[in-house]
Length: 102
Image 1 (tube, rainbow, N blue to C red):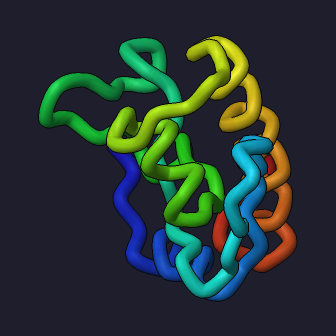
Image 2: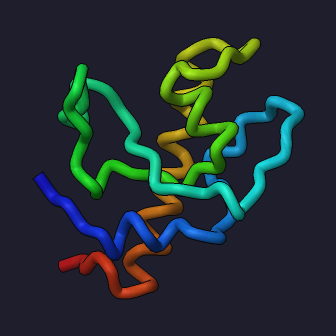
């Protein structure tokens, strides 16, 4: 399991990459690294996925992803938004030198 404070802190002040169109602000001041995926990403009840299974998410999108807030969208669409942002997040982490492609 990968754990990295540098990866988690990278999201601070960054634009939300989940962008669930829920009509609320995607405030960069609330951005965190949200863990994506379910069992396939090693995530489950009380278990966080690896810090390589993350996406930069504003507080609103993070709450919807984790089920703390409701949404009019299907769960599959919400996960699609998260996984799309995950790919961009990994690219940005690579450019920032926080992950290395070999």
